[in-house]
Structure formats: structure tokens, C-alpha cells
Image (cartoon, rainbow over all chains, first blue to last red; front, side, top):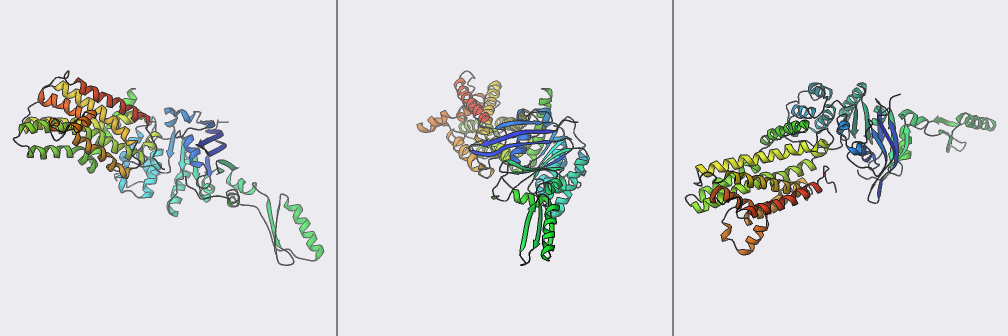
Length: 288
Length: 249
């Protein structure tokens, strides 16, 4: 068994009186795509920025590739690639020049042309960054994070603001990174993104993890079965049960005894979307 | 250590390339003091006393604009645009990065002093500097002082859009009150008092001694002391308030 790439235990972070993180724990295995899913202001960015070494934690233990990111060891930074939510670059630097420059900061960098190809920046090599579109800049962000050939990649809301085609392209790139054996930590407030990319998802809200597991498990093991039908008066009846077989047996035998039909009978299990919406139901629209 | 210096050198070379590619930086940091020198040289043509004041004055102004002004601008830009944060996520040592940035400013300063010195000899009749060592000492002291004050001042600037207002609110009054454009001996007493408390006056004094008057380093040692005191304050504030992250609120 390989040691986890990331171990987080009972992580707390307070800003003044505000408790941004109230005891977060999770592990990420090598080669895994781990998604932190939650509404804005849930604590996703605070969590990853502690893992990236940008912020100091208030309490708890954190290990990233065997290092404490709070010490900001250079050996760790050489093995990690970071795509932040918003970062700028010199406006007058050219794409290839920027990648070559950043490659020189790492002990074992990737071939610059390979990274350009992987991120779809072909044809833009000699463009100055301030002439790039938003989507191209985002791809350059990813390219700069990959040029050091990191084992672990942090992607903080990598597709926010993308059009659907650009999102699909970014997803393909992220899948190809997984194919290269990279460990990826992804934050997103898009449910479909977490579902499409992550091997495991933690749903974060108000600084806590509300649910954690594979996207499919979260949907199906996370809640009870829902049985719905219309009674004799035509009213919709909804029942929740852990044991649908017994309840159906009961309902159907009673209905047969009365000579009624259970109109519109359905048995469903909650999807990840249902779990997510239920867990984050009282969400207030905040920022951060 | 070798690695730290190699990376600093790479960063420095990138900063130099990008400096010339950015026309507004090249103009404000580089051409403006030289334009001032040309204008005032033309205005004071033939008046040697005035030229003896203006050449070391513009030289001192160049020290301030290439370090204080340029670094205050740069640091706010790099911080607010997230460049510092991005750099902090890489294995590039912070010291290598800062050496590259500072080296760029020092190069601009050295080039300007060289151009002004040659112009002083060729066009403004002040001859070659009387004391090269004194010139070097005062330029270096001025660079350390104003570079650290520039970084320190960047901490007080809340966003990039307001940077020109903040920087000029300091730079313009200081160059006028400190006697870049006139002989401080003719200034009213209160102005002299303010000027003497500020570092630029003392850089002008030292450069004037080195380039024109031939007063020795020893005679200007108290000026060096004032510059050093401001440098200590500047370094302390530059380090203390340093933030790699943009100010959001």
C-alpha cells in the first residue's frame, strides 16, 4: 500500500472570530482525483491554500507528499503544481518564454513543447500574454503548473467562467493528467464537474465535510429510498425507507386488499445532485 | 547558494527583457529623467552655476525614480495581479526573485547615472566627477535607501489603479522640496528644514560633492548618516509589511 499523497486531520482555520474551517479530515491516494465540492464560501479555497502552503492553519495536522506544507519546503514546491483561482502574469511576456522561464525553476521540468501541446496552446507560443483570451490565459495557468512535471496538482475552480466547449476541453486535459498518473485535488462548485472528473468527492459546507465518497456511492448509499404513488384521492404520497422490499410488500398487499391501484408508483434513490442540494440547502450566497 | 544566484540571474535577465518590451515602464523609469536633463540643460545653457545644481539634482532624482518609484509600481502590480502569489507556489526562492527585481532597478539606475555623468562632461561643462568613489558610495546608498522605501511604500498602496496617485503624491513634492531644480541655499528656511529631514536632499548633497564641488566623502558623512537611517527604516518596513497576496478587502 502506498502512503496517501495527502493526509488532513481535524483541520481548523479561523480568521478573527470567523471559523472558516471547523475540523476537516480527508486523505487523497496517489493517482487519485479528489474533488472538493461546495458552494462559494464553503471553505474549499481555504483548505487547498493551506495544502499549497499559502495559508497557515489554526489547528490540525496536514501532510502533503510527506511534508508539512506550513513549512513551505522547497523540495515540496518542486513536486507540486498549482492552478490558483486568479493569478496574473507579466503582461509583456510571451507564452513560450514564460513556460521556458518557469521550467527553469524546477529540478526535473517537462519539455515545453509537450506542455504547449497538452494544454492546447499551439500557435500561441510567440503571443504576448496580454493579447490572450480568458480561456487561453487559463490554459497558460495550467501549462505553467504542469511545466515542472509535478506529481500532485491543485486545481482551484479550473473551469469557472468557461463556455461549455472550453469546459469539455479542460476536462479532457485533466483526464489526460490522471492518465499520466498524477494526483489531482480539484475544487469546484459545479456538480457535473465533480461527477465527471473525481474518483472521490467531499461535499464541503460552512467549513465542514458533510459527505465523502465516490460520486456514485454518494448518490446511492448516501440516503434512503424514496417511494411515491397517488392514493385513492389522487394525492401524491411520498415515503422514505431503508428497506424498500418490505415497504412495497406492505403497501401493495394493503392496496390489493382494498382493491386499489398504487397509481404512478415509483421507487427512486437520490442522485449526487439530490444529496448535494439537500446538504447545502440553507446555503447563503457569499463570496470567497 | 550557487543555485539561488543562478536563479536570481535568470530572473534578472527576464526582468531586463520585459522592461524594454513595456513602453510605459521604459518611458517613466528611464527616459523621463533624461528628458528633464535635456530641458533644464537647454534652459540653463551658459549659466554654469545653475548647471552645477541641476546635473547632480537630476542624477539624484534618477536614483529615486529608478528605485523608489519603479519598485513601488512594480511591487503593487506584481502583488495585485497575483504574480507574487504564483511565484510563491514555485520552487524559486523568494530571495532569488527579489534579487532579480532589485537588480533590474539597480541596472536602470546605473545606466542613468552613467548617461548623466557623460552628459555632464560633454554638454553641461561640469567635467568628470571629482571623486568617483564618493559618487559610487552615494549612488549605492541612495539605491539601497530608495529601493527599500519603494518596497515599503508599496505596502501602503491598496490597489494597482491608485498607484500613480500614491507614488506621485510622494515623488513630486520630494523632488521639489529637496532642491532637484534649484540651489537649496536660496530656499526659505522651513523648506530647508523639511528637505534636510528627507533622504533625497542628502543624496543630492553627496552627488553634488562628488560630481561638482569636490567636497570629500568625509565632509558629507552626516548626509550619508541620514540616508543610512532612512535605509534602516525602509528595510524594516519593507520586510515587515510584505505580502505575497493581493488585498481583496
